[in-house]
Length: 260
Image (cartoon, rainbow, N blue to C red; front, side, top):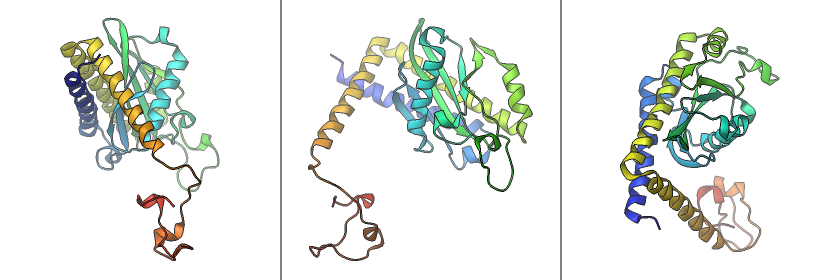
């Protein structure tokens, strides 16, 4: 049985962690697409890769980040994930995005036990590739980085850094954004461990599990209130045109109005 007070503290605590990750990324990034357009997202994830909390820049990254964390777990295997590692990729087919979106993932360990992941996906100004016109394949989009170790037990993979630097047009910006993302995921690690040290590992992880169980129960309850049937949206409702066969105005799901 989890303590409801601790659960609420943890709920707000993990939100605070990802918001600080977000703030640190914005303040240290080198390109305006990150610190002005907010084309990024930070997050904490369970040891299985499920989302705990998100510091939202772009909401569209939420699903892709979780799938990317899970792909990295599968790639290395749980037994080969070590403290001090940071994994990187911009694989469009894993992240569900384009190559400019680079994702860093850091495993969080507490006393030798994997307790979660800190992750950050952000848009780099340039990742190589063609300028102008329309690309016809992924190879003309730019540099593809498969799942690799940017840091291996705390040691920077300088060969990978050199490859990235050589293949972008603005290496100082790219390296600055890379360091900013490292700062963000390390912030997530530090603050999450502080939360565990203060309230205890079992209490924090138990609270996170309880929050997820509650969210699932609420979603299932809400879903059951939707009557059985076939649902559709009418584009005319969005334009304010026409009426239904029964004389009532068209109503569109997209606007948040009642279902047809």
